[in-house]
Every structure is written in C-alpha cells, then in structure tokens.
Image (tube, rainbow, N blue to C red):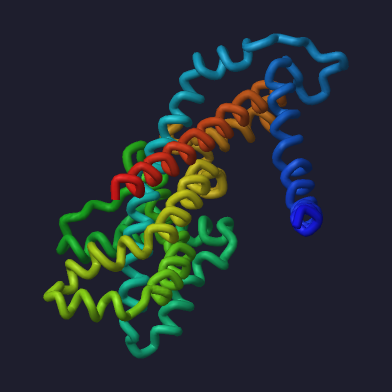
Length: 298
C-alpha cells in the first residue's frame, strides 16, 4: 500500500513539474528580480554597480501625486467595471440560455469583441467618441435626448474620459464572462427548476434560490479574472488618452511603463510593479476570503 502511495506521489510530482517550472520562470523569478531592483536607484544606461537606496523608491512613489492618482483611478475603474461587466454578462447568459432562435449567432456576435485585439478596439472606439455633433456617440446621445445633448469631446474631458474607457472595457470583456456563465447555466440540473416550480417559486425566486447559488463557482472565477484584468488597464489609456486629460485616466500600469521607457527609472518602475502585484494579490485574497465566509454561513 505504501509503495502504491509512493508511486502516485512520484507521478503527481512529475506531472506538476512543468507547471511549477513555468510558475518559477515566469512569475516567481521576475517578481523576486523586480523586488530586488526596487531597493536600488537603477536607471537605463546607468553604470554598474547600482546604488542601494533601501525603501527610498517606495517612499518616493507614495509621496508622488501622479502615482496616487493612478492608484485611485485603478481602484475606481475596478470598482465600477467588475460588477457592471459581471451583471451584463449574466444577463446575456440568461437570455441566451432561454433557447431562443439564433442563439448561436448572437453568442458569436457577443463574443467577437473579445477576439479582436484591444489596440483595434481602442482605435475604433476613439472614432466612436469623436468630438463634435458628427461623432457617433454624440449623435446617438443627441437622438436619445431629443436634441438636449450638447456635443462633447469625451476623451479630453476630465470628467468623461475615464467613464468612456470604462464603457469600452465593459463592452469588450462581457462576452468572455458570458461564455463562462452560459456554460455554468447549462450545467445546472433541470430537476432543480422543476422542483422549485412545483413548490410555487416564480422566475425571480428561481433566479435567487436556484440559479445564483448554482453559479457560485463560475461567478467567483469571473470576478477574480475581471478584477485582475481591470488592474492591468493600459492599452486603452495608451491609445486613447495617453493618461490625460490632467491625469484623469492614468493608471499604475501606465505610470510603470512611463517610468521605464520615458524617464528610464528602472528602480522606480520596479517599486511600482511590486506595489501593483501586492495590491492585486491582496484584493484577490480578500475576495476569496469573503466568498469562503459566505459559503460557511450558508
């Protein structure tokens, strides 16, 4: 029996080695390298050896108004996009799960924005947000408001720039979530709905007491992935606004890239990357912790 258990352990380790090797090479070692460089004053092209500055880089970034603004923008973006995108994806999944005619075509149509490169999507939406009354978004809002809407330059308005990027991101990513939630809906046993109907439960009660509890794991996965992607916001900002106007759309990822390629401050960029990694890790852990507590209470 012990020999068999030992063979199973050896087999499991052999199967896990490729994954562990990949995690070590592409996650652990880069993070440890960035952590080590964050304690230095390394710049691109600076002579070796580099100067050891300790926690000075972290003190600098947390006293920098631009970095704090970028961090606040990231938190606001995630707080808005994650719930709205998840709710939209759930609504689309519920609609397509009704067995409507042409559901396959609609599923493909909703998923197409996920396949397109974000650079292409950002360029298209830049045209959609074109200023003046001839811009597509301005023309649409003018028609919907019966002429009361005044044309605005969305991407150069400090108030509207970040919401404009939020709308693009919700539209582009909801199809991915929809496919995952639709697969979860199709795995729910129909007997649960039949039993709930026999007990007199209506559609709303079935949604609250059958559908959502059965979709717990897909919803957790979708929200975790969406949160991580929300904090990786960069392409839309780089292409559409370049962090403007007045740092209204700058993000941690954007500030990190600018620190390396514009200001050549590698040590500063590594400190930002470490803070970014720890922030995402903390939020992900809190989400899983809260979900675990809800499961224990239930």
